[in-house]
Length: 220
Image (cartoon, rainbow, N blue to C red; front, side, top):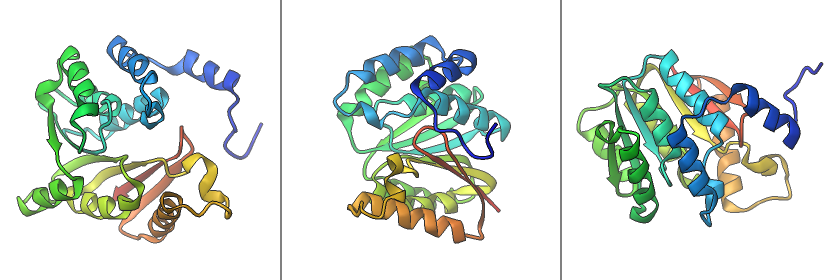
């Protein structure tokens, strides 16, 4: 028994997946292809993707936002969980990475649900606010450059409705956030982000120790 989160061994993690992961074949194929990519560590874990899909269904989300697409695993998890009329606005700056995502979105027949915006995400988010879409999104997922996490979060907080959910990836950053000797820009940015959210009374907060750490912030 333990009164704190377990540090999962490879054996225990494999067991966890073996008794809980229900990964559609198209997601498994995308994950396998991405595993050979030079930046494969940017992809979320499959159990995290399944957890996010569950959250989408729990809150009845129909309109979602993603900042950081990479090869599209998280986008596909979200799109598959959305109802037939659901929409996801996905923000990224890479045509190269998202070309892989587009192939799998098409294979999974969710292309019509996903509006991919190739541009700096802050520009896209500001355009959405200006276009009157504040308080209209049910769910937002942030997984992009760490130095802009606070900026992405503030825009997402404007765009998500009260009772909507913002999920933020990599908040434990491989454990580096707890190591005072690590002082690179990305680590410091995540530390500042975590501390800011801990004090933010505009949201209800939980940091879940899944994969590389996932913060869940529900807008009050």
